[in-house]
Image (tube, rainbow, N blue to C red; front, side, top):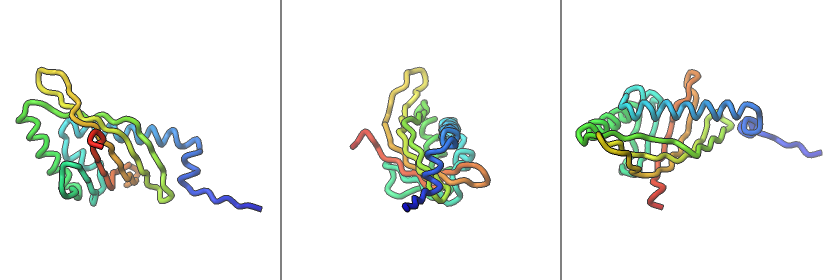
Length: 153
C-alpha cells in the first residue's frame, strides 16, 4: 500500500480555490501598481510588511522596511516631477505558487514605461519581479521583492 502525502500548497494548486486565489493576487498587484504610479508613497509602502526587503538592480543595497520603501519611492516621484513625466508599471505573465506555510511565491514580468507630459509612452525596461507574499490581518503584503532586468540577460 502506497501512501501519498500532499501538502497544503499542492492541494491549493489543484483545487477549485486556486482560480479565486489567483484573481485575488492579480487584484493585489493592480492596486499596488496603481498607487505606486500615483505616487501615493505611504499607501504603497503599506502594501509591504513592516520588515519588507526590496532588491532592485539599480541599487547596491536592498531597501529595508516600510519607512525605507516610502523614502525611496518619494525621492523617485520627486525626480519624475522635475523631469516633467511619470512612470507607469504593467504586470503580466503572473505565476503564483502557494507554499505550505501559507505564503505565496510569485513571479511576473513588469513593464516600466515613461509617460512624458505631452508625448507618447515609451517602454524603459522589462523586469522580472519575484515576490514572497504573506497574509497580514487578512490582507496580502509583500515581505520580499527581488526585481531583475529581463532585458539585460
